[in-house]
Length: 142
Image 1 (cartoon, rainbow, N blue to C red):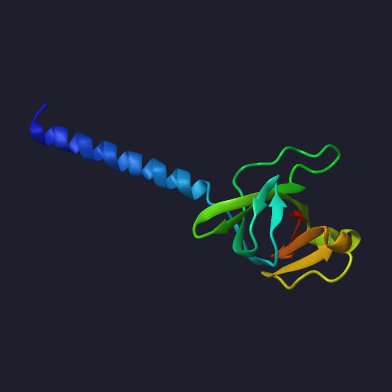
Image 2: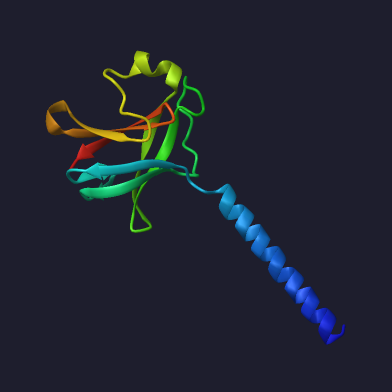
């Protein structure tokens, strides 16, 4: 193999690896749900999550199916701050057609979140509206 053909072969491999990496990353891109400001520290998936402002996004990891519910009725939501996932919790996914049957009250406007204190201050509900689909996340207060 000549030096020129070795260099061409190496370049071909590098470009191929970069293309596969880019396609894999694009396929695993998490969908943003919006910004959430937690007014107090909570527990998310059994781990502490400090009060503060987070970007909420759907995880690429799938949740276990809930018996008797459609496969897409729960999703993992990640709380991201400074580019790092600080916590995650399961969200109940409510399609637009079911909102009035499931949720009491008016949903937050599309693209926004509402934080509600529940059960005497023991829980926070993070209610996100993304394109009419509601994501309800329940976090226990630390």
